Image 1: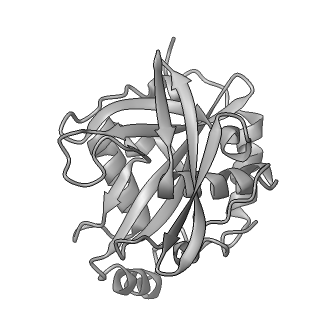
Image 2 (image 1 turned 180 degrees about the horizontal axis):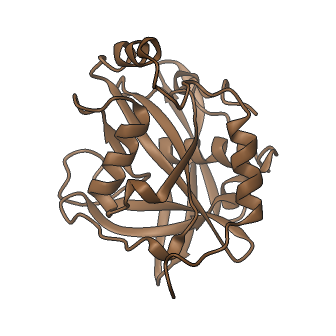
Length: 234
């Protein structure tokens, strides 16, 4: 199939338009010196990271690209995560961080990703501010997954809507610094493997799915307050 011959999904076109018309945490354009300066000041904090929520349509479903982290890593080894990582000193903004990390981790060409919005940051236990960047992969055929063996064990795709459903989900109550909240565990079978998506990654995807499909999950999220996630609304 010619990678240049593809039809843009009407569903994703409508989603793209809706996100672009909605004010996000940062302006996607940083052409003006004042905007770029303001963004640069925010990004000087060493505890900032960004993840890429890369969406594509297959059949009638919207999918998100996920990875299983390498067992060689010292942090969160073997866990499922979104492509992403900490800001590099040469990154001009959160979008650049997310796209650079995705290219390094899974071989995703930044030119294939159409960034449509940036969500407000999620906090984490490690005092890292994680910024979700939502992008659309219009031409899935042009993406040739190349996992970086030093960072990624495998690459897989999950239907975004599963993060709103009770199916294949369990929960566990956690207490941290006097606050009780839920960790959600989503089980997804693909390529003869079962992946478990949980913790912050699951939380980000629950919120993203709620925004994309404009509906609440079938369960009570009860996410930790330190994630600061209630302000991501459309």
